[in-house]
Length: 545
Ligand code: AMP
Image (cartoon, rainbow, N blue to C red):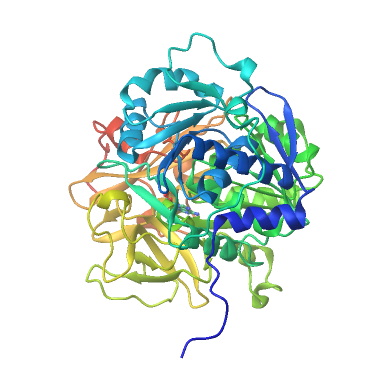
């Protein structure tokens, strides 16, 4: 016997309808590529998204056809999020930080028919357009008078010209909630990039999950700043969850430096921000050098890479900002877990509380987790046993776009490639990527632990730990360090810094390599593959131990 509840599909168009009706006057503020600040509202966004839908109809785009974007976080990008998916097409967010060849490859693989781009990416589009055989129209996200004259790009229009003059009424189509809504390729360090193809259902469920109080805890009273790009897993779903709760949205555009982000936070009374650690590092440096404070920022989600404990403490102790350490993946839409405390933690002394908060947190309802050993058997949740983390749930991929890479699942579970422990309270701690874990004498050493300790040293700006070959132990950890400008620390001093910290003596690094920079990937994460390549001739001086 079925229940007798209405069978209404979960569709992205309902999110924007809801935001317009219930929070229509709530603001959407964007720093534009042009440099100025633009002010809009949810009602305005909804209206213009409907114009986008008309423009796509006029181009005779079919359901499921792909519309690509090469754009920063901003109001026009948001309108495309809703206009493209709402009308049944697939929004394909491209990462402009990838190599040109890779971008062209992805556009062709996705068979994008229209490509919308911010003017700052004009040179990039000029370099690749002739190789993008499926793209019929190029849309520059600008006013008509800013459209470059002799760009050499065929079928180029300005966005305002393209959607202007079209009706702002549109009946969003109703279809199966499992219909594809957006597409995001993983940056993939090996093999070709693979596309995670989200559905309306997965996107709406993910938004429901992520707004919960113990997750991102968003409400209509918030002013939120997604610094995480809209081309990086849909800015962690914030454009959708913001519409669901009707909060104010503040977009940083291309200006991700500490000063610009700080000014926007203060001017727009931002209460919640989200980004990767490398961006927050720039913000903290700006605050520290200028002796500045936040007047409205209450909490920030930090994820995409491990949040160094020193960063978590700086936010809380010096600026009164609560850090929510989150973990996820492109293949998971991306949210898997967020770290928030339980009632039993309330009375803990600071040190013990921080040790909990440094973890990647508890699973969001909707994501099941397990850790397995080398034999594939489930490991206990004792906070000590480390194994490969597998997940399943309604917003986790079951296959990649066009079947690329074969069937990724193992007995219905998605192997994350992360190594983790889970404690009896369900708190997840990522200790490594499985390919980054250091195996010394058959025992695992967490590169993240080694990096976090180095990052707590006042002279260290960035740290990466990699394993290097050792005749006796197979691999030993070496920490690669970039010092803050004008500050120095010696090799011995830094190695000494590990004494008394939360790592066993045999897990401490054998050496320190000082570099001017650590290579970063397209989403701001450290590229350890490149780093290993860079240090391939490096040998440990003393390999006798
Ligand atoms: P991406 O799909 O590019 O977002 O990368 C996902 C990967 O980033 C995960 O599988 C983890 O290896 C890493 N990651 C994301 N968040 C965290 C975190 N909070 N701590 C450690 N690693 C993380």
